[in-house]
Image (cartoon, one colour):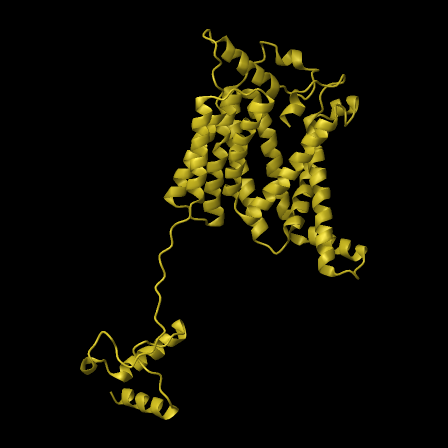
Length: 394
């Protein structure tokens, strides 16, 4: 995805990101629809027609509670829009550091909305994770004593990220010195984006785990409702005039389609992680993927390994281990099953009365299912009645 944004562009310009977002949702919608159809076909049996299976899937997708997925779909669209506002008003380092607050907001929403309890150890691991990822994402100073190398590095990052459009038509305005970044707007946008990210992720987890609908049906619903804001806000409103002039697929090539495909599959994998783990675990996996991306950049994009990268990586890995570590369970207490006629603790003359032990055994039997090791089971109903009568006489 990074290479698709920095590779040499076509004569008409680079592809528009709004079209890529829409195609990402379309691909996810098609993949999840095919998997849901195949899954329902296996449940219906080989003698069920494809029309009946498709009707069943359609009824599952568009049943009365499907509107619940419109909320996280709209939130995710708003989050993506705020990210563009943030990177347009902040340098890359500040954006990356501040955006890691989404991990803590996810934990807060998990506690408040899902009732999940986090131990002090896990809270510490969340803080360490945020610190570690922030250290990794900070740009390393270039080995130039004058400091010009650092400035040129930051300028190159800004040129890649902060272009207001996906084409070079407006690049002269982006490089205009009069175009100033508003730090307060950028910080406000990234903080709101982090809050929305945590809210949308936890809400989706709650909806996904709170109903009987399958994961694939929920993904169809989420992708379907995401099509509307992606089309009307991104394609029609944001880049409508540019698309009308250049065409929807202008600037597309094999690299662009590969990046869109990987992004669509990544969204499905995230939903699988949320369904079978939890949303905080998803954020940990995302954080580790950032480090893996940096490692890949060493080999493919000439990334220079620094001491701060190593320190940040170790902090993130330690935080992941700390969060995933389970508490040691106490050793279970085993009850001996052997029956004895004499209690080894007491001498025979001091042995407790049989009817009291029998009464204790009768009270424990329904909950433990194990007879007392210091008593004998009555051998006949008459003997049992005798013991019960003696107890009532007492």
